[in-house]
Length: 300
Image (cartoon, rainbow, N blue to C red; front, side, top):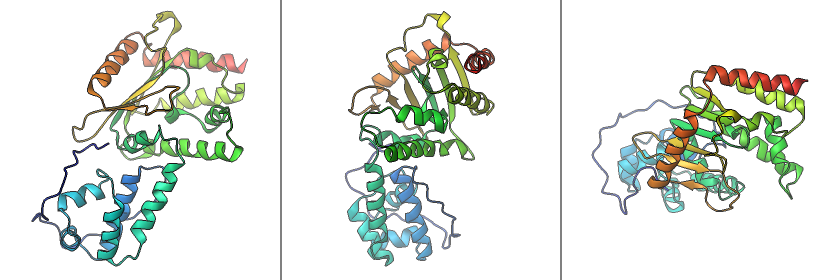
């Protein structure tokens, strides 16, 4: 899956002007970023440390400058062949090949039906989220997530802890200088469903109130009184992509197949469904009051 069209072949290296020198960037490896984003950042780091401009590396490989730019920006997936070629051109031994192998092994620990979403979620500029049965992953506390993930049959305690850490790691996109705008609607049933002990439930809903104070989060509750049943078959997320790329959607399901969709017709249907659900949701102020009522119930 590609956000930017992937041509069959690349043209000859382009004569694109580029500064002769680049300042050495600071890098902080985040295992919860997509493979493309992390590989691209490391590729740029090693290119700069090796004293290569983009154009010089493209001549050595050879490779189109546009292709290299997309790799470094995380907009194009790396290949083993290209990683080996760049390692050789930059005299890195097997540095980039080993990095790609490590990233692929890390990704392989994630359920196959969720991996495509991890490629797109970090790139999203905004998300429209409908939570039908539980608090969405990006807004879960560690304790709430553990209560959910520990119920999966056959999961060992170590696997539960790793899964919780992975879910918490996804929230790093909310701490970026420019986090994606989240438009979240929760079914009122989530406020009543005993996923964990009362203390955990209170902590989760206090966290929702705290997060709702951020300017990039709009949080609403769909009340039982609305009698809106349109979204009861499951939750979903519609993510808007940068640079006019089409939106993608993640659909909650019991299926072990691919739950992510880029199909225009299906995304249009989900957008229409989301708007109908939102039309019956409480205002943000009334939604906060509804969550406060839930905290009081879980307290008493």
